[in-house]
Amino acid sequence: MPQPEATQRPMGKEELEQHHSDCPPLPGHREHSCTDIAWLLLLSLAMGGLCYPIWHAESNGDLTKFFRGFDYKGRMCGRDVPGSFEFWCQRPGYPPDSKHPICVAECPNSTQQIHACFHEFRNGSNATVATPDYATIAFGRRCLQNPELDKTVAEGLSLLAQLEEPGTTTLPPSRNSSGMIEAMLKKAEDCDITTNLLTAAGSIKRGAGVLGAAFVA
Image 1 (cartoon, rainbow, N blue to C red):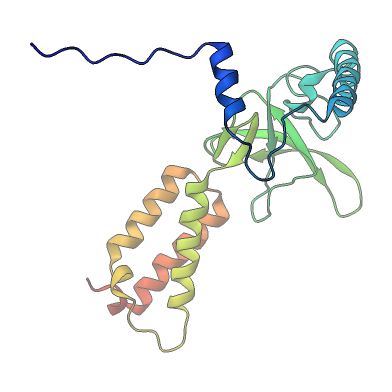
Image 2: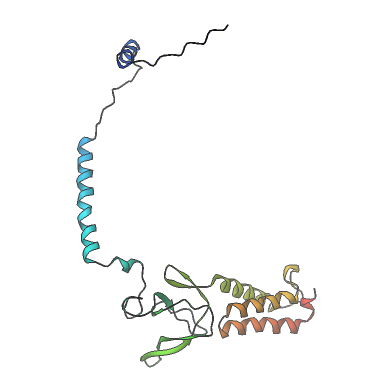
């Protein structure tokens, strides 16, 4: 009958110390020790010193300023004025007015509504004017322009530029289809883009009709 193999007994503390004393140290060996005690004390004091300004800021300040938006009058959205989202108005034919945001209850997703937005007239006077919305998405309590809208407009302008090139009678195979124009216009309507962008898309369609054979599938 085979005998079971003997298991190795763990060495005790004295045996372990005796084992290490029997083994000569390697070249360059140094005993490990804590060499940065003074710097650890300084770091602990610095970390403790930071606790006071953090406590003071939380007790006497308003940390929500880092998360909420403000309108162009400096009023905090959702606290000083109704509406928790910051929205930048955009007049047709102009980029969004980043200097005069307003607060809205929810981010607009179409052009079917209007908001009272800041407007400066040529004589230097200003007033709030009813301005149509544009499609946006909510991100961090800000209303950002819908990226699908930017993609649609970029495709339309690129196609229009090709149609207006002298001597252009055909388009690349990937765009040589009237269905592509119809799909682009449908997407523009779904995104509810502003009138000036719809006009640009309509110009593309009219240009396709003038060239005729350019959109033969």
